[in-house]
Length: 461
View 1 (tube, rainbow, N blue to C red):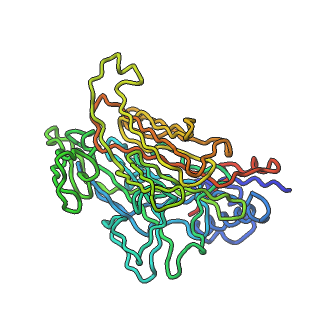
View 2 (cartoon, rainbow, N blue to C red):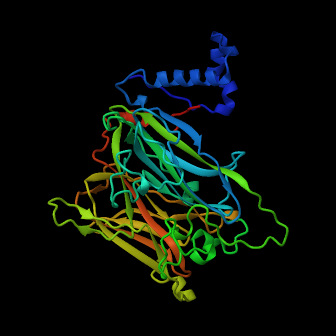
């Protein structure tokens, strides 16, 4: 078997790339636009990687970066947009990773201390060819069949609750979502797309401008009194015991800001979500995975009319952490000043754990996913920022067990534990665990798997 080494392309250094120089020497393309030249280079490298359908080298990772439509931010303002039919790789592919960040018009990353990325959600859906595109204010539970069909993940919450393939937030800054070879999320399979429908993607973005905020933590946690909100986005009155959370910081609401008496100016600005997709073209060597999102607020009940291991779920998505008195001694004791929330759920299918990570907010101290016998399946802890992002959760540790080392059985009762510090009251916190499993594992017959590294990346224009 012939081994081929693929060289990553850096677009900014294309003019000095050996492949580029060779093309100029042996063809008449020097008069073509640079874009066409780069497309030629990419095609050449793809051909090298896929000239033999019987080896794993056709699993060349392709990378493409996109920008969402712009959104305008002013001090205290909240935006919650549902961007439908976003740019996304077409055809039958396997997603390897998805990364998100908020940037300005110059492409500079925006600090969380200025614009807090509360959460973002990537959803796949099918749209009928005769249907009109939904607006950016149309939530997922407002999409109506037969015009729209949500192509949800594998579970476990009820219909249209956490249907996402990815559901993250501020931790995107330092978070890896990469799936090891040869595993990937299968999408774009024409056999799965209903007749007269098109597969499309949506990105839900929820961000809060905290420049000049009177109480930044309160704004981030959506304390209702700081937003002067008494009704949710649908106009329904809030209950007296609802003190903060998503129902108080929906699109176009505004958190209380200080009077800018010191002359400091926080101008209106246009921002974007920059998202990067990594994928491989689908082939027989890819092992498909299943995505499960577990919510620690879930209170499942068994289905009485079902003969299989199944449950009726009730996911609330958010919950509150009440402060308790904590002495210095208690703060040093891991069992004190720690708000623990648990959820026990029946795992819906058998699979080998490939990847796991938790989504939590400020104040979190980590989350753990346990098997029925008490074994740790995955433990995920927050990574905190420094300097102007000190105290913010800018990442979460991930789990990459050796494939085949951890198996979860169908019907196994798993326990999700979410921990937050209770030295302060926290409103509207979340505890969501991403668990990705595969029905089978890759068993290499040679050293072939070592030849395909994470750096075999093609950058698409």
